[in-house]
Image: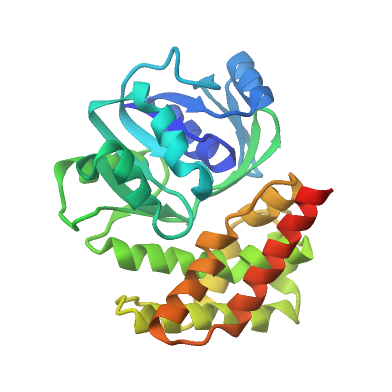
Amino acid sequence: MRVVVIGAGSLGSVVGGTLALDGHDVTLVTRDVEHVAAVIAGGVRLDDGDRVRVAPVSAATGYDDVSECDLAIVLVKSFDTGPAVDAARPAIGDGTTVLTLQNGVGCEEVIADVVGRDRVVAGRTFVGGRIVEPGLVEYGVVGRRTTIGELDGRRTDRIVAIADAFTAAGMATDVSDDIRVMMWEKLFVNVATGAWSALTGLPYGELSIHPDVEPMAIATVAEAIDVARALGVAVTTTDPSVPWRRAWEGLPHGFQASMLQSVLKGSRTEVDVMHGAVCRGGRAAGVATPINDTLWAAVRGLERRLELA
């Protein structure tokens, strides 16, 4: 396939680079000028802790020289979704499928408003990545599944082809017939570590062994599970400790949650589509979410401090 990654930061570089290693024609598009320059000069280097592999990808900061693709993968921060997909129109043709692997709930609807619902498929991935330096990405793929699906739940040829391509490249991928469940199951993982990591500044390895954080992080997930059920989402997770473990298992000790990566860069986080989504859902369903409410407010306050710095 010809693949364009819209928003090729850490995770986008991992997904795009992994597909490129399996022979796909991949272009990474990101506003990170230094990362683009490094990738153009020497490919994207993927470090899994045991070895570094160099993926032969193209890279750009815009779409002037990017042709139409078979698959566009959206991985910008949730709050940038609409403008980023609109800017990517030169790469999106009649035969292009647009796949969102973003965090949170609702990005697929924003993309559908821009390119049309029939072009959009959605997914969630537990693959992780962190840009160590321009052109070099630390990542974890083994044992970290990806799930994708059509918005209407059908098992189409295109969704199967994408899943097969991801799996063949080393990213084990399932096809789901209930995208709403899939989104909430990933959200449980997001809220297990997102705000806790951002507020403490701890990477996954330290966060996972902290005796005070663990029970409260699990309680954070429990609130989210209660909200999902109250909203009529047929989630399968019953033990809130499972998403907590899933969030950090298989990743390097120093790996940082995406929300912490945003804080360290002094940029806005995705707390609104993570903990904020749980809180809004709780209010709609009449379920109290005091832990997520507190975390949401605390991270929003932290974002304000970063703005003033």
